[in-house]
Length: 574
Image 1 (tube, rainbow, N blue to C red):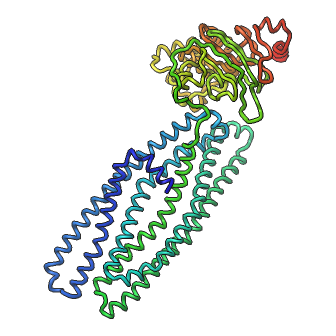
Image 2 (spheres, rainbow, N blue to C red):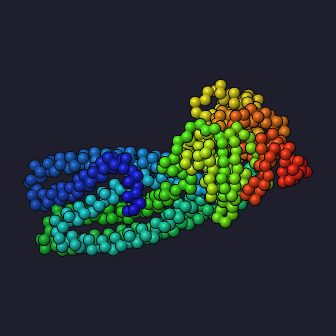
Image 3 (cartoon, rainbow, N blue to C red):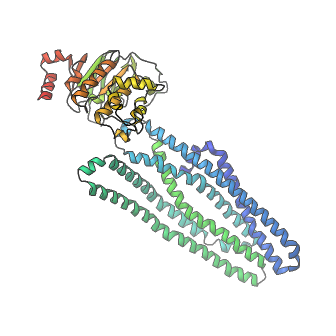
């Protein structure tokens, strides 16, 4: 009930449709209760007063027709209103879940597979339709039918009604026991599906590596193993289902046997009319039918509740990086950046930066160099506030980044990463990404300045060419030039270049350097690179070592100093 209540709270926007569904469901159930009464009246007329059939039968038939018509109307309203609320709720929850996930800090993604997250957004939310459109209306209908039938039976014959419900406590116990045993299995099944989705997403993304390293059999076996695990969990649930449902049906039949035996004796003694026996058996069928249906509905409900629990588990996660309540909305900044005694670690006990301090002036180009893993990319990530410092603070134009809204901070930053990500779309769409309102002429200008136009013009459809998933149809150098064009078009006061020329040849690198020299003018630029040609013209070169600043100066100053930077240069040339 805790999960169902949460779901209903989330769906309160559609409460008019849900309440309408509940109302017509109750009306439908009450009307259905009237049908055995009509049949009972007809049987009694046949048995006791056949002469009255000429007058009464048409009346009973007309009443039955009216009842059937309103059952039809309420069923139509119930089906449409329930599904309208359910599918719109699924739509809302998918968007809400996606929006929540995309706003979580990068630390959340460090141990998550894309396929698992996709399973939460697509598969788990899908089962919410079952709860809104089917489970809740069915529970209402079956509950009304159950208690309605009990009342009708008691009103007809108390003793026979008590005989009829003798088996109900045992049925209720087995339904409860089944729910307790099967829900963990359904939750485990959802997790297995998520893991399988994650595995498939990884495999399809890494198909080159799988083929070139001849790991096809290994990956097939891994998928087969996970699929077998899913089947095993599912069969474990259905093994319980295959025993419980028939046993509940048997108990219901046992109740019918008791009624037939006891009712027959009572009819023989004249304690019951023939029509009452028929009505009693019809009502008994209406009593046991909801019980059987509830037992089967319970299986779907447990599956949906397990999905709901997983969905709310994600929604309950709070981002490590989020706006303060009084976060400042900042406009365009000058670009003065200062690290003040910053320490940071991805994992507790392993510090990447230790008491790190650095000032970067507005319009200055600073290059960060050092061996792999010393924290160069971490510095860039902290500036973009993908993470928050463990200790100390970072200021932009004298304002702590944590006091600014994340949106306004990102509105001041452009970034070109080593692992360029291009969306499945056209070349132009990818260059336009992050630059709302730009025109085609702006795109062409940015492509020209990044020296991307020369290869774009040779593509089959030019700027309208589809680049494929992650830009698979382009080379590494082409993707990086598109990323640089994207940064040029974005035109922000802070530019971060993280290994922006790592995947290009010497000629392309020269062209990109010419583009970079143009775009860094009047911008605060942070360059992370191993290639000396990329960093030698920087205003300052910062050598990072052991989580702090080892050396600082221009290329010439550091070469004359003969320290860590010169050793890096010599090792690069070796």
